[in-house]
Structures are given as structure tokens and as C-alpha cells.
Image (cartoon, rainbow, N blue to C red; front, side):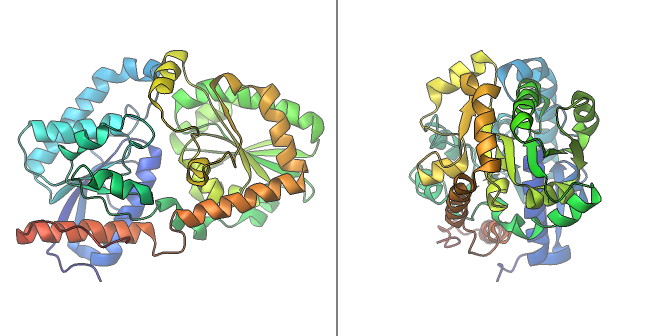
Length: 403
């Protein structure tokens, strides 16, 4: 049972589409536990709007990655940091929940503290301090009051720095029920039963799509030479659909650009393999048990700085959890069609190669808490428990949630 709480007003701050989805799932979990006794404000996208959030502004300026993409947006990003933090101080919610996108959301949190507001601040989807810059854990402990940990080993790491961090599970695992409709989608799009279907996922931000889409186009052209029955599906986030359609004219294989989460998950359900940018979508593909090749490429300055900081050998969460390259990664200099295409061909044509990866994907998803209560409900319980303790004036106790 959720803690008995008075009506709750929460401010949620997301900075990009993946955070918008996570925020929407958390909002749904909170409403499941307390019903109409909760209200929301803050910053989000269409998924959070569907759950009742009226966003202070859209996510267009904050949804960027890489130094080259961020630098021109800095004035607008900082303006929106001020807007969000000023709103938090003036509206005084029961808690502010910062969701992913630390370049944006952590600035909001720090400015709230700088303004002297004693608001409880919660971080949902912490930066991967275990992968790079571990000192950020102690920095976060000066800003945040609670971290909702997605990975089991994160709890101990943050709590060593005095920051409460219950493990709530990875939100992606509760999307399993949505991974359906593949057969219907293939029929609706007129895809022959004998076709080999490849899901192409070049990212959810222009700064990712710019360098990756040309590489993916040429990779598909090479795959098509060996897999003549190839058909591609490309799910696109709503605000980029027009851009993607324009960029994929004369695609080297039959291509269907899809809109909306329902068609995205149906594409996963109906796919034989995937070619994806590194990111949250690779964990969604793992949940759908779609074998994949992962590629990523950023500007060389961004890459050079990242290489100096990153302490783990892989980018894909499946590989990090398993401690081996179960999912082939083609990063930066290796992000080339000549290297990627042979792997994609094997995924489509080599049954043993494909099935071996599928077994690894199932193992990784189990480690993310797939057999427990849904992460959104566990996260919602942790939030409500924390707020109840603060309201009662009690010193928050180390949570038993997720243990």
C-alpha cells in the first residue's frame, strides 16, 4: 500500500522525449496509487501532457546532445532553466522531480538551491556516475534529497555518499505489454510474409540523426544487396516526422516511416532485427527480444572528451549488465557501413547468431527487474513515502522499496 498522504502537488521536469515517456509512466503510477489527490506542473512533452501536465514550454531547445549542438542553444537553454526554477520557487510544490537530461534538469535543481528554496528535489534516472565522473555522486548529494535508482548497483553507490537511492527497477520493463501488433502492422503496410523486416532507429534528436542517418542509409543499401526481400521500418518521434520523411526519400529499400508509440512497439514486435542508435531504445528492443546492432557517432571534440571520462567498455546497457558484448557496438570510427552491414546481414540470415543474442537479451531484462512490480509503481511508492515522511517532519528513513 502507498503511504497515506494529503493531496500532493508535484513539479516534474523532463528535457527530452525519453524523459517525457518516463515522466508519463511515473505520473500514471502516482495516479494509480492516489487517484485525484495529485496534481502536476512542470516541463514535459506529449506523453506527459496526455497524463495531465501543462508544460511551461516545449522540449525543442533542451533536447540536444553533443557540444556542437548544445553551444548554439546555450542562451535559450539557460533562459528555460531560469523559467523552470523560478516557477518551482514561486509555486512551491511538495517536491520537484528532475527526470534524466542532467545537462538541463540538474541546472534547474541547482538554481532552485541557489535561490534558497528548501524544496525536496528528487532525481529520476541518475547520470551514469558508475560509467564516468564518479565525483558527481557527491555533487548530487548536495543538490538532491532522493534518487530513484534504475539499476541495482546504483543504490549502494549513491548511499555511500549519503544520498538515499532506492532501487525501483528500470521503467522500460513495464512496456512489455505494449510490444504487440507486429502481424497486424505488417498486414496493414502490405509487407509480404517472406520479407526480412529491419527496424531503423537513428535517434530521437537532430544532433544524433545528422551524423547517423547517412551511415544507416548506406548500411541498408549494402544489406539490400544480400537480402533482396528487405523492408525497413523507421519509427520517428512526432516533432521529427516531417524532417525524417524528407531525409529518407529514395531510401535504398522499401521504407515505412511510423508515428506514435503504438506503431513503434508494433514495429518491434514484427521486426526480425534492428539497427539502432545507442540509447534507451536499445533497452526497449531488448525487452521486445529484437536482436540488434548498435551504432553511435558524435563530433570528434565530444568524442575525445567522452573517451577521457568514460570508465566502462560498452555503451549499450545490455552489454554493461552482462559484462560482455552481447550486442555488437559500432562506435565513432567503427560507425561505418562496411563494418555494420555484415553484422546486420548475419542478424537477418544466421538463425544461430540471432538466437544466441536473443538469449542474452532475456538475461539482461531479467536483471532490470522484469519479474517484480512495475517500476513506475515502485518509483511512485518511493516518491509518496518520501513526501509523507517530509510532511510528518520525520527524518526520511532508508527505503525498503526495491530490496
